[in-house]
Image 1 (cartoon, rainbow, N blue to C red):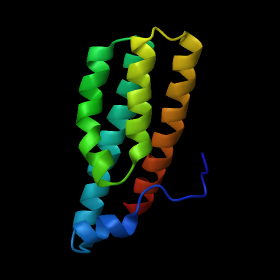
Image 2 (cartoon, helix red, strand yellow; image 1 turned 30 degrees about the horizontal axis):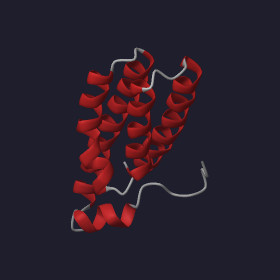
Image 3 (cartoon, rainbow, N blue to C red; image 1 turned 90 degrees about the vertical axis):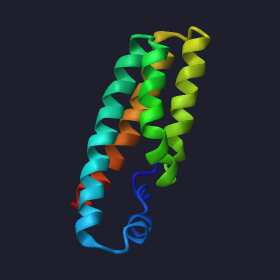
Image 4 (cartoon, one colour; image 1 turned 120 degrees about the vertical axis):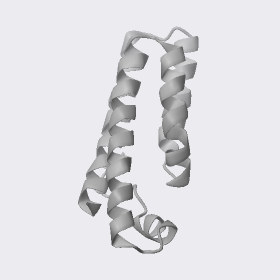
Length: 115
């Protein structure tokens, strides 16, 4: 992943929130909570091979990811479901968890920069 590329489109967020600094900061805080919860849940449920709980976590983050054009979150989530359905190796699951961790951490870093 290219860490030099900005993942969070701050202008998109500002446009959605009428360029109101207070709303933008509030949205950033809420996004930090959501993406932190998802990152942690994703790791736990993938490594536990719990596809039902993974789906619950995915359904919670999907609207925010779509709204922010963070499609890689959804792609990795879908890949995790496929890996679990195909009884993938622990190494494959672990690699995907690491990839999601890295992506979400970059998103969190960028939202922290807004607050």
